[in-house]
Image (tube, rainbow over all chains, first blue to last red; front, side, top):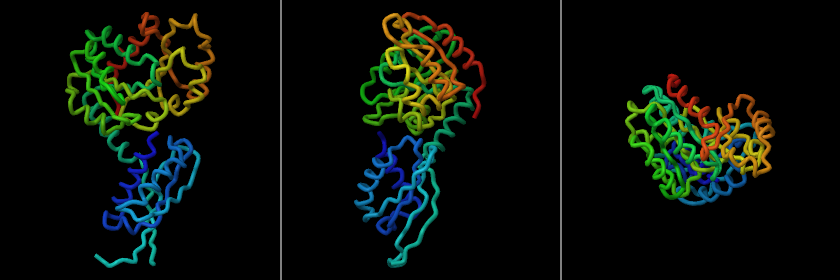
Length: 86
Length: 223
């Protein structure tokens, strides 16, 4: 299956949202995964965990909400702002 | 620690779907209808296409984009029958084609010189169901050497398809495949699915398929 490419896309969306420099400060990635989305949730979590525990990330959590239907989206990001301003 | 929350709500497939919409627009702009052929490996997709190109090559301008994990065998087989264009995508491990790959393939085709585009997807009844390529319609190909419960086992694919080809009907005397049951299961999942019953090998049922393709080529593509 292609959960790794979905996980990579989630990382890309995250980078687009917060900018590459802020990636180490992302604490949580919120997802909605539908049962018809064509993605196996545990596999996706496994792949995403692997990506989020390596640079440029620094160990963000995956928060996965499951639903019926084919929804597959990044719902929110939690970022720790306690860092020097740009 | 000050943690802020950013609401995102972005679909993971958004980028693919935007590219697919672009592909759809490009095809419609040239009046090209595109059929995305999906199936599990061994259903006879390639032979179906070979025969189609052979039979209709003098009437319709057909182009093909093929996707395979490894080799260009399908592309090589098909290239014998169309001097027009076969563009092979070797995914090297990717289990489906995506809109980006199809968009790139279109750059190598002269769409002004095409009536009908076939995308021969990677043999896989699971993943391609989730990836819009910008096609006019998906055609799911399965065969009588598979189980008639295929539609129940892969409902998303059968739901996403508009047309189904049940192939290898020449083998019906030798296999316990129940055609009526297969159609019943398929219509349970997708009541609007239109069926063709073919043997690409012997030619049985192929006239109906060719008639459908002729009609497709004459209908303007929608965006």
